[in-house]
Image 1 (tube, rainbow, N blue to C red):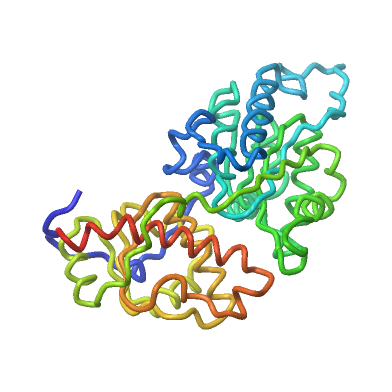
Image 2: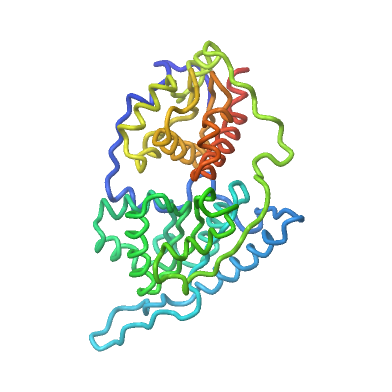
Length: 354
């Protein structure tokens, strides 16, 4: 809702969110953008058969999770034997480029799995590692160990320590019969066209390869199929005026926001945007270094998940990252961020004409 803002826009830079552990657990559901997605709302590209195949495979996978929990489901008996670890794949791994709908499919799997929400969890790799940090390893195993399904979006291979931590966690959850599904952010600069993404993922999560069926999803970024070009950046004056005219908008200087992101843990970037109706940024310019760039990627993901429009002045979003960054190991992340920010900029265009 838009209208004259009584107190003026807020500033993300003035926010220092604290996120209790209980909220981390409660929020392990598909984000708002994916509340209503289902397999039948996914539009496969007719020229990419792998997309239709993924829907078929995942629909069958969801249906197969309708029985009792693999670890027994009921109360534990004193002399009950430990349930054997399933020998058939109890997980699927979605391998593909940005914008082919992997998160849509992952969220659809979550919705289609016949279990109450309390027995299903959905989160990004960053959110999962933060949950372990907040609860501790053993408590996280206890919390998620009775679940029917754990979905991990954007599985990261950037940090070996975090990867090994989550690998250990997933091993324990598989032992308890939890089914797994994941999408991955690989390092295509090191993997050659990303074609070894699935193999690399399965190697990194040591010992879990037998539990995953990799699904390659080919295609182009759906966010730009048949859509108009993203709007050019507006002037500082236009962005500021729109921020003051839009109820619930935030207004920040881009360089200042980048500095603030360095002081807030990325797991809190979602909370940073709580209650924000639109993000208005002045002075957008090239990101100075890779650490800053990776933080911006996380913020872009959280804004996109929450469908928060982004109105900006300065350089276009496709000039945020240097050529070196776009040709480096993290390029897949940067192209995804550009894609998502461009979509959000398109959503924000009507704010200027109010």
